Figure (cartoon, rainbow, N blue to C red):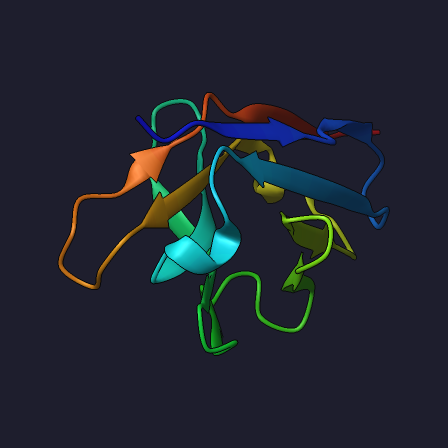
Length: 117
């Protein structure tokens, strides 16, 4: 059973920054890809960012240029740096991972991000 533990959420003013962290129970290199998704109340889950084992990154259109996904191989962590935050970024952010491109993803419990003045 894969466990993913997120941290780093909180309350931030519009225009501010936060960095989310994800700690998997196994090596980050055991996964084909890891990433972040978010879900706001009453809305569908939205893909935010993905990083593959090879280091390729991709982003949802709404966060391009503001969010950056990265990993620390030594610490076995995946991060989501979020800059220029907007109220519409408010959501529960979930870390996810999958062992292969067609495999079912594993999900963390999520961390709340609230952008409000």
